[in-house]
Each structure stands twice: as C-alpha cells, then as structure tokens.
Image (cartoon, rainbow, N blue to C red; front, side):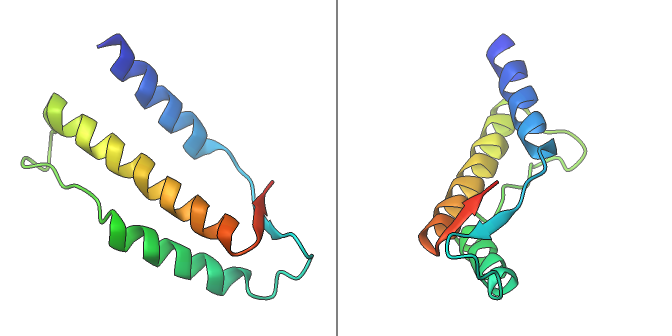
Length: 88
C-alpha cells in the first residue's frame, strides 16, 4: 500500500511539472504538428484503461491505470526526442 501511495504521488507531482519542448536546431515551427502526432501515436499504443465501475477503481485497476499512464508518457517522450526536441 505504501508503494502505491508513493507511486501515485510521484505521478501527480510529475504531472504538475511545467516545461516545454524545444527543437535542438532552434526551429520550433513544426512543434504543434509534431506534438499532435506524438500524442496520437502514444494514444494509439496506450488508449487508456477505463475501470469497470466508473465511480471507483479497484486496487488492481489502479495499477493498470497508472501503468497505462506511464507507458503513454514514455511513448510520447520517446517520439518527441526522436523528432529532435528536448524537454526543458
């Protein structure tokens, strides 16, 4: 239970972090298009888990949801890095 609370807090804190992507070569003209592409790619690979009871997830489902969120972020960040952007 303690590990779950730490994981949830970590996800929430990183979600609150503000930062932006900027191109390594300084040309951010395609940033919006590339961001939309990477979000679409990440969502197609990890569409998101919806709990059986929409008002409350079981403990097993919480783990599935958190795993899906972290996998989504990993695919998105990998895509943005592959397109030549750095997160600042």
